[in-house]
Length: 199
Ligand SMILES: Nc1nc2c(ncn2[C@@H]2O[C@H](COP(=O)(O)OP(=O)(O)OP(=O)(O)O)[C@@H](O)[C@H]2O)c(=O)[nH]1
Ligand SMILES: [Mg+2]
Image (tube, rainbow, N blue to C red):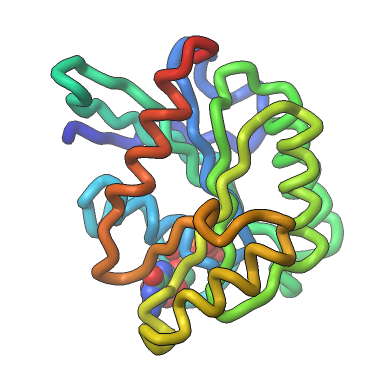
C-alpha cells in the first residue's frame, strides 16, 4: 500500500477538493483513532499518537492507494480531532464538535464514518449524537470497538452484545479492533463504502 499524509486542516474550507472519496475516523479523545489509522495502513508512525488525550487537533487526510479486486483504489482516510477531552477549554470543545457536525452534514465525498468506542466503555451522549447525525445526513456510521486487547478474550462477545444494544444495533454490526487484531474487516468496510454506485 502506498500512503501519505495528504493534508491537514483546521477549518472545513482548508479540506482537500472533493475529488477523492473519504472515510472518517471519529471518537472520543484517546480512544485510539490515530493508532487505528496506523494499523490500517501498516505504518507505525504515520499518524501521531499519544497516551495524553487531545493529541490530534486538526483534520488529517491520509491518501491510501491500494489494489482491490485487481483495480487501483484511492481513498482518503481522515483522522479527526477527538471529542470530549475535558482539559480543552469549553470553546475549543465546542469548536471541535461543530467542525465534526458540519463536516458530516456537508461533505459530499464523505462515504462513511468509523465511530470508535473503547470496548471497556459504554457509549455516551456524544457517540449517540454522531450516530444520529450520520443517520440524518445519510452517511453510514460504523461502530468500531477499540482496545479489544485490554479485556479478556472471553468477554469480547459479551461487550460487543452489550454495546450494540446501547446503539440499537446487532452485535455483528460492530467491528472489533485492537492490538494484533486483523484490520481486514475494516478494509472490507472501506471498500464497500467507497465502491458503492453512489461513491
Ligand atoms: N492496548 C491498546 N492501546 C491502544 C490501542 N489503540 C490505541 N491505544 C493507546 O491509546 C492511546 C491513545 O491512542 P491514540 O491513537 O493517540 O488516540 P486518538 O483517538 O488518536 O487520540 P486524540 O488524537 O487525542 O483524539 C495511546 O497510548 C495508544 O498507544 C489498542 O488497540 N490497544
Ligand atoms: Mg489522534
